[in-house]
Length: 195
Ligand code: HEM
Image 1 (cartoon, rainbow, N blue to C red):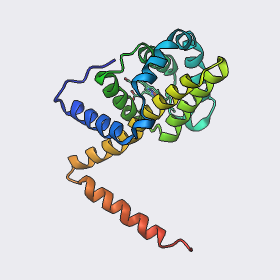
Image 2 (cartoon, helix red, strand yellow):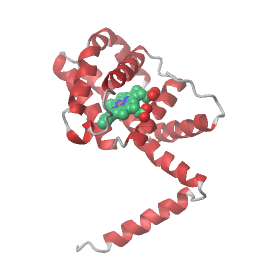
Image 3 (cartoon, rainbow, N blue to C red):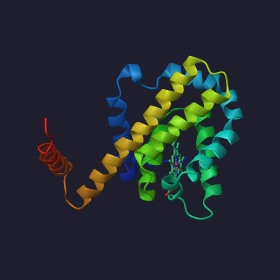
Image 4 (cartoon, protein in one colour):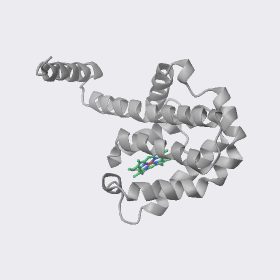
């Protein structure tokens, strides 16, 4: 797991993504301390599924042309290793600041490979569905995994907005300008809807 130096440009960007994203999730829907206890309780069971999850994850991505197109020839073993390391680190905790900064980084790193939010969120659905199918899962575990998946996916989607805004700000295009432009285009498009 990488460590992001406090005060560095990447550290500040990731902190912003984590803080805004986590603050926007209503408390009742947020991955909480009790969800962490549940993950810890079921850790041996979840850890025993590691190889199935890793293999199934990439079998799924390689069997669908839009997701298979993301990968370069020979890349699969490396990708399997990073997913395995991520899964084991996640199950072992702790869910501390470094972990969430890394999750924000994991999210934005996918941008450079054209991995889209539907692909990413679809695979979270696949992980949870797979756990449910493989074992007699209790509702508390499903709930904890859903909230963890929603939080990590939110960091990915929120991070995609932030990294684009950040990149534009580097060439002097502000976030407000971008937002106003997008809103005015949505309004222009919406004016063509017959009600
Ligand atoms: C549940 C959803 C996913 C999780 C948890 C996940 C996790 C990860 C992790 C931990 C890394 C390594 C990040 C690092 O270097 O620290 C990574 C990289 C990568 N993932 Fe994913 N991933 C997900 C979905 C996907 C999907 C849907 C695709 C492709 C369709 C994908 C393709 C890749 C690629 C190509 C990289 C290498 C990125 C780079 O270094 O340029 N991932 N992913």
